[in-house]
Length: 207
Image (cartoon, rainbow, N blue to C red; front, side, top):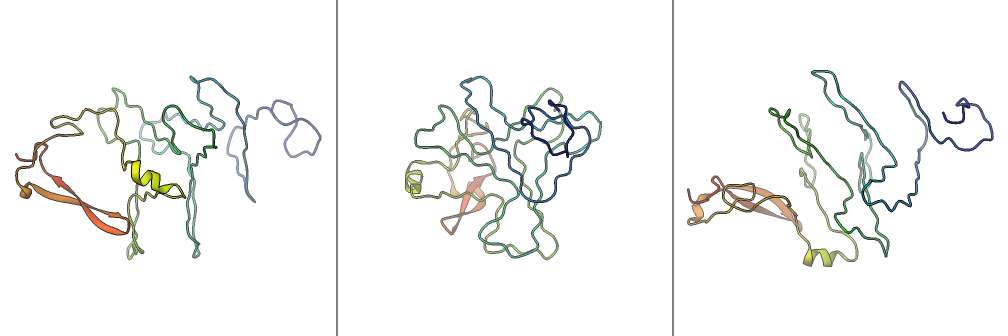
């Protein structure tokens, strides 16, 4: 602790500037709030008010994450979440590059020669006898607010960058010569109705 005072003793003193704790820290009781303000004008260094850093060095270890757990034992209202990321732009606020509410970033190396990797992992666990409610999906996306019509007119479902549209690449090109070449589909719900995104089994579609 920067001021050398012991925690748990009432005293009048300036706020802590830093706090180093070794071992487990358990906080119980009511809500806990962390509020910060940044005046940074440095476009090369990210402002990170809270940093949780873990280095894994044990072979065969798993996890390494920060965990937010919500247990629900009653009928809740219109929504429930374990974690929320929110960005609010004021009337003069903007981002000159890319703005997002939640960022998932992964860096691969020569060591990732085996295994499966994805910046985002979504798991829907279903116990025996589980119900799917009104509509259960792996991803739910909604457009809200009084200005939703603007996004409805000009927005995109997906903005995929860093790829080349050609041949049998991730964004493949091809020609459909027979509708029978389309053999699969993914069911999606749009504006309350079911649709199927059609798929073919070959990159050139008419192989």
